[in-house]
Each structure stands twice: as structure tokens, then as C-alpha cells.
Length: 309
Picture 1 (tube, one colour):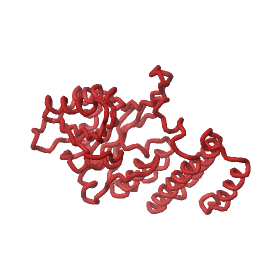
Picture 2 (cartoon, one colour):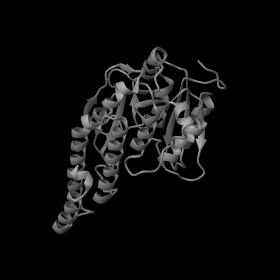
Picture 3 (spheres, helix red, strand yellow):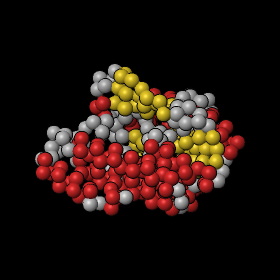
Picture 4 (cartoon, one colour):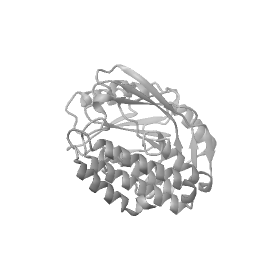
């Protein structure tokens, strides 16, 4: 295990904003990992609940835990960036404080890193759904199979299917080589719904090697009362605009890699999914388009070069 001044294998960057109900468990989940060569950066974005007190207490008891505090609320992207700026580890990981992970996740990643030395390690997840009263509803597994690819030509064609399975767009189901992030000045940018996706497109354009862990070691908790998808936090038009951008970025990446033709049917099906979701959201109470609104919007979509392609 690295000392406080040495380079740990993993820098765990955990954004914190009013997560007092979950933060102690999240810290405990890291401390109980079977692999112990890590540092934990708790980046507090001006919490108004007891999150800061919990983080201060944890940092006082464990020298591997450091607290980074914002003077003003800056949002998730900048909170992660503050962690990147402070990190010392070989790999960066960005778990959410209200999720959980198998206690051997870091050990699995360390073993794969020692054997293959990949630029990025990706892993599967279990979506765990809870109602607004924290009652468990059901779960959905999205696993990966252990594999390693040393040449980009061997894995570039896999990314479109990884995106189809929803695994590409998250930041918390990947360990990123920090030297690549630093060398290319990669940082998160504030983007409605697709902050992680935009970061991943930039990182994967620079990565050379990719490895996958086996199974579903990350437990992604989806609570009804916190779900943006189930709320009226943004308009149907905004939803479409950001997902059109997502499709554009994915298409450009695949084209740049020379694998667009094979991936085009999947990209098209994803685009159709976002079109249908936009129409669904147009009926939400705070949006409620008229029939004329939908007709006008659909005509603009049909005229769009992306739709025609």
C-alpha cells in the first residue's frame, strides 16, 4: 500500500453535494475494499446538509482520504475536475456517493491492470430501482465479460454496441489512466444529460488499450424521486437537442475510426429511440406540446440531414 506521499494505484474521486444520507456508506464501501492501494478524494460542492461534517470526520481518521472544498457551488463537472486536479493515482475512478460496488472491485481492477496495463478498464453494472419511499422494486443486470485489447483496431468496432447497451456513456463504470487525462488536458464540461458521454468520447479518442472486467460489480441505484428521466427537469426540445448531439459525436467518432458503416444500423436505432422519447416527453404536464407543435417539430426532424442519413 502506497504511503500518503507516494503514488497509489487508484485515485477515487467522489463528488459530494448533499449526500449525507449515503456518504458514510459510500466511504465505508471504499475502506472495506479487499485491495487497499487507493486514495479517496471527497470533493464537496458546498453541501448544505451534514455531508461536509461526514467528510471531515472521515479525512481525520484515514490519511488516504482527502477533502477538497469548493467556495461556491460549481456543479458536477467542475467537482470532478477539482478531483482530477488533486489526484495522484495511476488510474482515476468517479463513483457516485449514492451507489455501491462489490468489495473486490478494486482488487479485480488491480489484477487486470497488473496483467494487461490497459489505458481504460470498463465493467458492468446492476441497475437497482427503488420507489420514492426507498422500497426496492427490481434490478436489471448489464454485465461485461473479461477481455483485453492492446490495439485500438481490435476494440473500436465494439464501442457502438457498448453504447447500445448503455455502458459507454457513464464515467463511474471505468478506470481511466490519469496520464492520458493530464497529457491531453481532458476535463468534464457542463452538458445537460451527456457530461459523461462527452468526456468519454474525448478520452477514448486518445486511449490505445481497453480491458473489461467480468460481471456486474457496480450497483447503480435509480431512485424514483431523484430520477431526472422521470421528472420535468428539462424540456422535450432540450432532451432532443442533447441527444442529437450525442448521436453526432458518436457518429463522428466511429467515422474517424473507420468503423461507421458497420455501426450505422445501431446508431440509427439509437437515434430513433431518442426521437420517440422526445415525443413521449412532449406530453409531460410542464411541456404539453399541441398537435401543431408536434407536426412542426417532426417536419424539422424529417428535413434534418441526420434523420435522412
